[in-house]
View 1 (cartoon, helix red, strand yellow):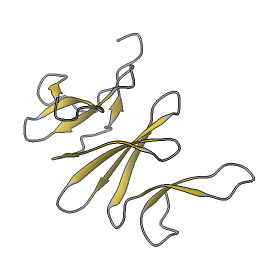
View 2 (view 1 turned 45 degrees about the vertical axis):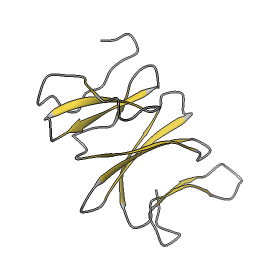
View 3 (view 1 turned 180 degrees about the vertical axis):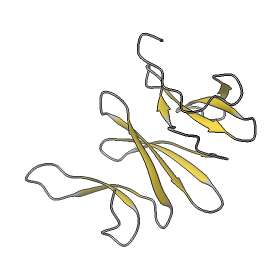
Length: 125
């Protein structure tokens, strides 16, 4: 993360190569970046005083999904083991929600109310 371009952005720096901008968040504050364990996708959380935006991008910078949330939640987003959804806290329901990256409107509660900062391991424990 850097504001070297004058805006808040995510950059990729490969040894011996020039930096490549993956995502330009403008003046929104980028405060969380989570890599999918195999490194092929990133969940990027940015916020303004009015909204929290989650962007899912490839490691090459291609956009896979963008959605708004009313809040971030402690330690979130967390990737689900299948790499097809992320966990985000929704303060309007006081629940951590599972958000599929291919259909962000299909949000479903993942844990009981007030559970925040959840991580799920590949074996489900």
